[in-house]
Length: 187
Length: 143
Length: 175
Image 1: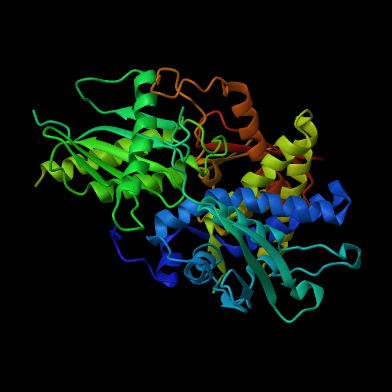
Image 2 (image 1 turned 180 degrees about the vertical axis):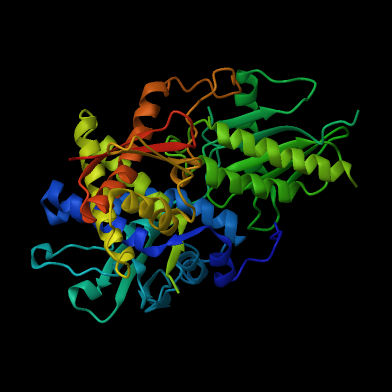
């Protein structure tokens, strides 16, 4: 089906949604991470929990993104990655990501975030070694892609909170779940 | 009195389960079992239509026309189907379905009590849908 | 210019936070879940009040601080002010928001008469829904308490949401 209206530009998209003061978001997320660290004690458990939270958020956010952005079906994973980087990040966080480091098969790439509102004001104490503070973001990507039939693995390879020069998350397409044909096994 | 432009609205989850059905004044309102069965049949037919397509990349039936009604269907990329039964030749149904999809993302998916893939029971969603349908009806009649 | 993000980000994170604490961690102990959620709100309120009061003189009395919450603080967070403020002049204040942003998408009532295709869902919401909504409200209660505490006013805050999406926050100042 031809799109009814042309996809919006990232800026137009961000301008069209309801927005709030980013501090509220950043501080709320920070307070949740802190509380989880207190309650779960193990940093690895906190990482898992943040990823799971992101996943759950992603499975819902993806529809809002599709409904409001007017993007149509992407031809391949490359196009999908571009849409996420240019429109997805923009619509929700107001920043764009750069897609780089494609592998030869075109099934894994990196999102690089120069500007990451999630970490404004954040400094990790030494006691939080091993914490993937931004795991909620990778979880969101994984959850959202799964809803459009793409199973992915998303991991952080660079993290400024851990001393790297930027934020880089690696997205690997594990498999593209084929469309279901319900009438085949319907008895 | 003018006939309502929209007779009914259905939403089907990605596994073919009916999660929303509203009747806006059609002659034969369906009972629960009938509507569930019909939803799952439509889900299959939609899939079959993709298989029938001579060229790959078909996304299924968008419009089904009968002599006394039209059925417009929109499937989101996440696999949820929205379809309306309306008067023949009713205009702007794609836009209406898109608007309903947006309301779904706002009032269903952001309702903390809504569990994904489950039947939708959200008063605010009902209210907002009723409003767009009303607006749409007015726009149609005002022409 | 103030940096902004989509409101959905906050909605999503708050919704998941409540789900995590009420469902996954403390399903059987709602009072513990409530305390955690309130604590998270408290920290955020504490930090935000610090930021929003940086450039203003100290408050001369309780009422002035409460008014700051109703106007400036609320506007920063919700782009509107508290609609109605009442007090008994003995340390209790009722802050009413006629359309509390975080409740505008909560549908509580699975209306009984809608037998439309959806009655195969057996679990009635009822009490649990009301309980979860009050869980949602522990967060803003914590926000207010955190902000006021940071302004030197120890208090307790509770919420009344008998009339969605209106919501009243009751602030009791500890003396």
